[in-house]
Amino acid sequence: MTMDTLGFFEGEIVSVAIIDDHEAIRLGLEQACEDHGFRILASGDTVDGVLSKATRPPQVVLLEMELDDGSRVSDNVKKLVAAGSAVVIFSTLNKPRLLRAALRAGASAIVPKSQTMDEVADAIQRLAVGRTVNNLATVATIDADLAFKEAKLSPREREILSLFTSGLSLKQVATAIGIATGTAKDYLDQIRLKYSNLDLVVPPAIEPFHLPDLRRIRSRSQATEHISLLVIDGNESVRSDFDKYREKIGIEIVASAETVDGALFQLKKACRVAILDLSLSDASTPAENVKRLLEHVAAVLIFSDGSQPRLLQSALRAGAAGVVLKSTEVQDLALALRQVATGLVVKNHETVVAINADVKFKTSRLEPLEREVLERYAAEVPPSEIATELKILEASASHLLERVRTKFASTYWNTDPRRFYRFWRTEEAS
Image: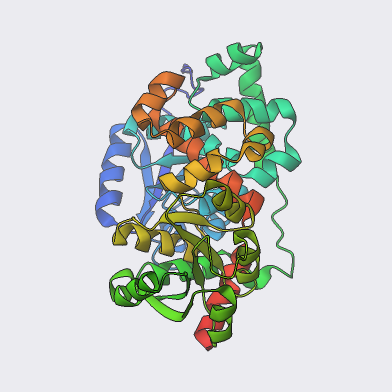
């Protein structure tokens, strides 16, 4: 009996289970796994169902992140790990909070469904013999966890993590910082180990606001629910436009006025989002207005003609979630409203330009490659050209911009799920 390069003995067959809501996906994966020499022990649409069908714990489980039974991905991962399986999150969903929850719960890797079957098979084989999978999707999810990076990683570990998630190979990372490729891999393995060993106990004060509450808010907002809106603009025609398009945009106007004082005076029920013009007739400052509004609403979206970058920057630093130009198409405005109403960040061009103008934030919080990507996006350089100029993948450029936007939001904007849960719950009661 001989051993191949991944540590397998000839004749040894890796056992796999598949958990996914869609039967067509399960059937396709079953055939593809068998074609790659794996044995399918069980396949189904729930974790409990698959575990009850499997005659023994599968070595590797391919798990969809969100299942129709309403189970949490962290709970599903813990069950499977406790049963003795390595878990691969196999999903099309790009939901960083859920991906981080899965890794913290013990998932071994994240493999997008857009990957080739050869890449899926490689992850399965590596996990079956106890090796670490340090693919881009898995490492990028850890890199996006800013609190973990700042609190748990050394400067060298943070540097290696950021370089690798920018699209560089391990060899290129090693060359860039003057270490051996094997040493760079050891650093990544250590980062993965630190992440999987995080304390997962939820403090009692946070318990009522766990992830499903925020998922429920988002699923409702993405369906037919109207967003409660406070409109503050000195131009009466602008306020009238919101009233005219309320059904098309999907909003319920709770109050509308030319000043923050006037709007808050009218406010008689819970409200989730405030639309705010930068310059109002009472000479109030955008920063003051944003801070006052955030005492009464979950999020503030700046609605401006874009002619006052300094004021816009001050509004964002005060906690505004993003900016939409008054010349924006109605459907783009509706998208931005739904994003901020559910705690998501706005990544449109106007917001990116405003972040790029914040020199203090760029110099203190961003790494060199992040700054270069941000500046090019702000200059409207096409993503493909950004990737070519910086010698990175186009997907890596997009990821870096996402990371910049997340850093900015975590620095200035309160995206705590408890905040959005509180406003949503108050809305239901009112």
